Length: 331
Image 1 (spheres, rainbow, N blue to C red):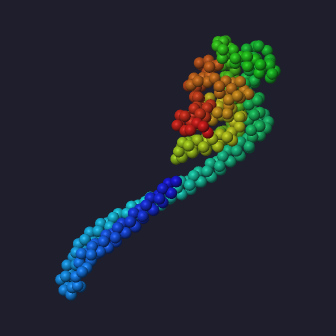
Image 2 (tube, one colour):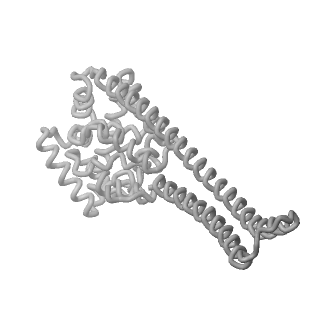
Image 3 (tube, helix red, strand yellow):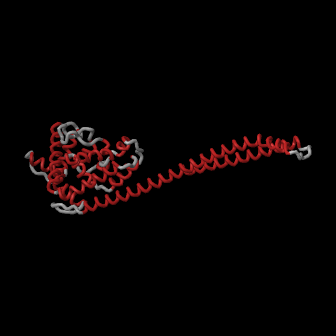
């Protein structure tokens, strides 16, 4: 669009130059015709002084027109050259931006491939590789069901199988959300047990997990710190986010609740990394994704770790995060 506008402006300048030349020529012809109309009945003079007077007459009338036309043409030429130079500079800028963006994308996909390679190579002492290893760690150490079963044992309330734990956990959450102070405290304790379980997983699997999530954090931080505009940053982070599975998001969430992962929470809030956690099958995760405020989720007590609570509404809603960046929320 901009190129067409510049082309149209150049054509207008050229047309103006043609008109100026035509006007000067027509004016000169009109002056000569006027002279011959007035004095054409006289015989051709042989006196050089008459010819000198004729030259002064013609030059005195035509030279100013030619001078004005010449200055105008020079001015138009400068304007045309300026616009062509601007067009050339803009084309160079576009080519530079395109080259920079191409290099950025190559680095991005190379970095992302490295992340997936590290994730695929992850092995769990509990069994499985890659995402399956993360799932095994979660299911056996810090899922809401496991945390609920451990809570029952700690409170001396007897053992629960998986289905019973799910039922009790759902009832506890609903009562907690309804304002039952005792169940609110119990639900908070279940969450803390789950967080302890996550920390135990990290302690025993640090060599498998450290590089994976550090690489992901650095990748997102690199995009955020780049010279791209907010629309482009959102686009590329969304590409990364689209490749994160539910289990990876769970690990990231718990990671942000530890001192080691608190910086990750800023990126989570800025780019709605947990937008896809709504409707999670895990009661604790679903509570965080659906019932939170700028403080800990309403189902939890005010003394929940960490302090302050690291997430805000934008972490779980793309529309909110986009609105904060003044980006269109339709896509």
